[in-house]
Length: 436
Image (cartoon, rainbow, N blue to C red):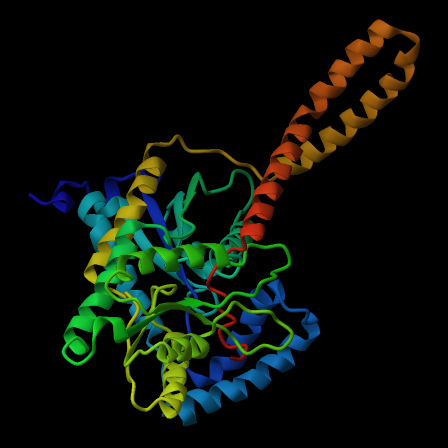
């Protein structure tokens, strides 16, 4: 008997014994008419995190960028339609199949796109709520954690959960979250193996290993992101881990940052073109371009990389160029992505349901302000009575301990955040369609 056959039917499973996995990606437009709307949402959620652009500029700027996008996709690339959404659906389906082999109908995988209706997080969470789920695993299928990747996902989920709260107790009784997988050994090993297999199949017969260049592509990151984690740190660590598995056989390896041509922004270096030329200058007769900071094919991994290869080929026609795919729905990736979710699904299923009533926030605020005034009044009189002062001082701390505790936690959080900034932090600055 299979694991699926051992599971009870959906009808007999209580809401607390089921988990909705919310797989999140960017989404890309499939109709050219949607460019302006997509761009405006991306400007609001992405560009606002690092570029000094006033919000009133977004609507007209989005329309202007839509003209450039239309020209690039329609004319320069022969009516290009992004395969991103279809591949992401294959990933959702593949991960769900792997998960249901273990969990059966207790787990269902939903997909949400940051910028594309009808799969916006708010729309999908409304469906999850309507289907009776009360436990949620938030799972951005994004390699590196940053304000531009998982950060946006959490922001949108929180906004949706507030709007969908209703009155009384919140319907959500448990949440878990997977921020990134840049340091997962199975992912790192798969990337290295794919590169080596491609070289063996297409290049090894005509190119020496020491003359076979490899550019490992991460999404570019702005060095400053208004205090948020920008993804540089995790992207760099991912690159170094993949490089470590390849460098002993293929000495010519470089990181290539897929930056956007935005003025006034200091981006990570070297960009793809510079990285490629540097490796060629060191004697590469072949150049492999492999995206490692993206798990799902998109217009950047397709069009932008293709554009850079054409640029390099014009200057270096003697070099052989190979453009590789992302991991996409590779069976090994589907299985590992499902396995990473297992521990969180188990934790959700085993945990006691939490009870949260957002309406109690008003009562808490009122109670705090009342106690605050009451304590200070007594504290003022207690100067005449030392023992009374001590007693009141205790009360004062008793009333405010939760607040102090919370501030302490908050300052620790800021400290960690600062450390992340100091190390510089992430990779997916998808200023997707803000041009480029």
